[in-house]
Length: 128
Image (tube, rainbow, N blue to C red):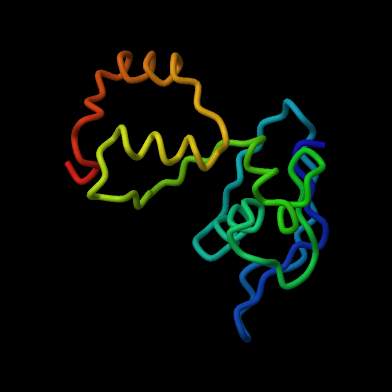
């Protein structure tokens, strides 16, 4: 299974953000995760990324427990948020280097190919 959630729940005090999600997504399938504001979509993603801890239940990505082994789980996935907050005083090159070190791998040839393909100036500050 690519993704498995069993009874995944998250509460903030008396507010329930996610209530007992059971989900299985086989490898190779695509899922559109839709719902109104407040339905728990972002909470689910944050739980699966290990960014927040569940109040109950568990989530796995490729059999890796997202709460106990978030770094190992991150090595198997990519996540592009709708909004991102990067380090505004770093250059693009410095940011790419930092993110590569965090992931534990840097493919310099592929990085350079993407920089060229997107006509990206890595010397500019992120805030620019």
